[in-house]
Amino acid sequence: MRMKRKKNLDERINSASDYLTIMKNESLNYNDAVNENHIIDFEELFGNNKPVVLEVGSGKGQFGCTYAKQNPDKNILCVERNRNVLILAIDSAREMGLENIRFLCGTAEYLPSYIAENSVEEIYLNFSCPFPKHKHIAHRLTNPRFLEIFRNVLKPDGVICQKTDNMHFFEYSIEQFSACNFKLSNISLDLHNSAFEGNIVTEYEIKFASQGFPIYRLEARL
Image (cartoon, one colour):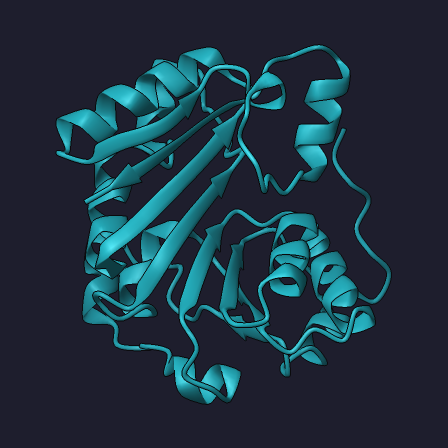
């Protein structure tokens, strides 16, 4: 069910400039995005030079806000295109008084024109849409076109962490990471019944785990 549009959404988004950057080039073909230079100065954005991590598809912000609270020595930039849920994430960050989290409104296709090369230490893909139909395969965030974007913005020792409840999407992701020469580690086929420590539970994760679905997780490095 689609979430009802939040009251005064446009006004709330416009007044969130202390936390929010809005992409300006979503009408472009994504192949042209890299030629649009809107590169974010992380030190200016966060007011410090701490390491930066990226969450692509942040939803209501449960992961991002929790990560920011637990890791005051790092900054997290959360990317989300749905303004209706994005405003909830911003509200949560504001209520928690978090200073090391910011939000970028837009889609992953346009990250090359906003995120500098070799500038991000970690990327989190939490319960991305699996786009199960083959005709939509190019929209999967572990499709090679996105992995190339992530490869470019990651530092040489960077890592991509993926979680999903969808077994077929997870299998697809393993295939694509391997084909694109990423090294895989910490692969879990049932995260909640594994020895993995430090997991930050997301909204979708709570929902799917409560229904008995196993949670799949991996780490991919350059």
